[in-house]
Image (cartoon, rainbow, N blue to C red; front, side):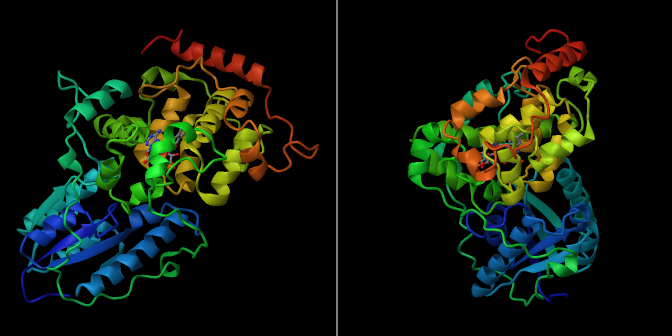
Length: 439
Ligand SMILES: Cc1cc2nc3c(=O)[nH]c(=O)nc-3n(C[C@H](O)[C@H](O)[C@H](O)COP(=O)(O)OP(=O)(O)OC[C@H]3O[C@@H](n4cnc5c(N)ncnc54)[C@H](O)[C@@H]3O)c2cc1C
């Protein structure tokens, strides 16, 4: 559709909200009427092999919501289903399109896609503008004094806090959607038309109580409690503002803020060291001779390892798309160290099922557990699932919820004996990487 006056486009991606959205606010300030769009990206969707994908459902519901908010303000939302470069080729044919606005995305695929779109736009004399939105600090914002990136969390977080100023989490005024292009978009493509089914998932609310932040330090490690925010999904898709969460965390115990900083730490690792997507951050760890036993992997995926805390986590993931952080660490350690299965297998399983799947944090978490990553757990520290259970689920409340048969004869036998697995792991790791030192 062509318009008979100059306008700009705001392109929603992982920032699915109309309030406090940096790129949208800049587009609205530009003086040009704004046409908001979203593209269901076939480059991504075609690789999803689960028609019941809960994330696609979540995006779809969120877009319907955004569309009605924009309509109430006299605008609309155009939603495309296709390959982004092909969609942009069509959009850029309209010579009244003067500028494109969006927020930065630091994943390799997104960087390449955005560079290609920027180039296509330039060829049509359309300007392309990107803004920082999903983090406080990105790229080279927090680096060592010699300009090199941090690869250890604690000094990174110290510098992060030193550079932080409260005004960095002030909201951008995009709620006042005064200058939207008045157009009528077509209805959103249905999930069915894109090859997906509706699911009945109940998504966590995009809300954070002050009391949660205040008690986070005491509650966050216990999977039976509701002691963490469950905001991962919302941070992933931008249905909450990171700035708002940081603002809410100020002048409170800093345990919660520290986790938000872990998220930025891993994002900058991915940006500085994109090889981590396929390879170990520490190259020697790619010499590990993984056993990669498919039957054992299958048992792990289904929650049938005979280790109740591992099975509880894996069953929770399948049933809900969520797993508690403490349990993520236990199941990831179990897969890589007890079963000696390549962390990339586990990473891919999480990527398929986690509602909050995020490349940087998932890769960071897996490489941490395998010992191969930045600031990772040393490999000789092999989590003992039984001791972890006693410490973090001493009354078996979490386990009983997901593995009700755990204390009956019908429960499966352990896939491997702990002490044997620990010794085998140490031998195999040592053969590949030598005695563990700070690497
Ligand atoms: C093997 C493994 C895989 C993981 N995969 C992911 C993933 O795909 N996506 C993801 O967002 N997190 C991942 N994490 C980190 C962490 O487990 C989740 O962020 C957290 O459990 C989400 O629950 P929550 O929202 O209640 O977190 P909260 O404890 O309430 O924390 C608030 C927010 O801080 C961030 N955060 C918390 N812990 C971490 C961490 N260790 N690393 C990075 N960010 C963190 C998240 O955005 C989280 O939503 C992974 C951890 C491990 C060990």
